[in-house]
Structures are given as C-alpha cells and as structure tokens.
Amino acid sequence: SVMRLISVFSLFLVFSFINADNLPEGYFGRFKLDSSDNFEEYLKATGVGWLKRRLISFAQIDKVFTKAGPQSFHFYNLSTAKSLHYKNIVLGKEFIGKGIDSTKHKITFTFRNGKLYEKHVPTDPNGEQKEDEYAFKLEGDTLVQTLQAGGVVAQRYFIRQ
Image 1 (cartoon, rainbow, N blue to C red):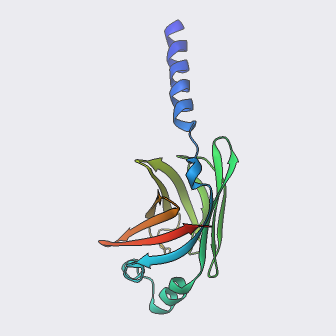
Image 2: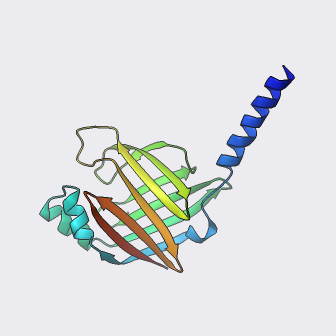
Image 3: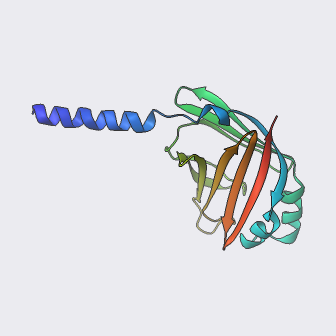
C-alpha cells in the first residue's frame, strides 16, 4: 500500500506542476486593435455574411488580460460590436462561456510553444459559430492574434496601451 500512496502522491505532484502556471507576465495589460491582415477573407471563410463582416471589421476592439490569482486570470474582449468577459480562467481548464455569437461555448485557454491559445467549441451543433481556436503571440508591445478557417489565415495586431 506504500507503493499506492507513492503513486497517488506522484500523480498529485504531476497535476500540481501542470496547473501551476499562469499566463506569462507580458500578457497582462490592455491591447488596442491597430490593424489586420486578411481578416475580411477569414470572416468570409467562416460563413459570416457581408453586413455582419462590415460591422465586425469596423469595430474598435481591446483585449485585456488581468491577473485574478496566482494561477488564474481574467480576459476581456471589449468591442463596440459585442464585448465578452471571462473570469478566473485557469490554463488548460475548460469552462462554459458565451461566444461572439451569444451562444454557450466550451472554452479552453492553453499556453504552449510561446503562444496563448483560446479554443471555442459551441455547445449547440447547429449554432452559427463553429469550433475555432485563436492563437496569440507577444511580439514586443504588439499582441498578434492568428485566426484560421478554410485554409485562410488572418492576423490582427493589438498595441499595448
């Protein structure tokens, strides 16, 4: 039974180690949308109609990351079109939150290979928005978001405020 205790303790250590990380310090702050490459084509590839693409393309957007605790953070996607707030996010831990389409999504943030990933899996298979994953990478004071759909890759550039 000592071996069993050691195995349980080892698993505990592994899981503690996996969950011990928070978002790297550089990501905390407010980033304002400055420019985009190929974003219109990305929206078209995701099936967004012309009028909605216009509204989304012209929206002012700020991405805000704040520290919630030693192992958690808050994320705000502030927009003139639609704002989203996700609180007490733990890297690698799925939660239910609203997507940009106002439906419930299973959302997971992970950090791997120097990038932050935000994955959305809509809970309604007939919903407007499909499963998607966005990557964020810090390049100096610029937060670069990469989006992909149907072979189209878009990037959006957010400047630290």
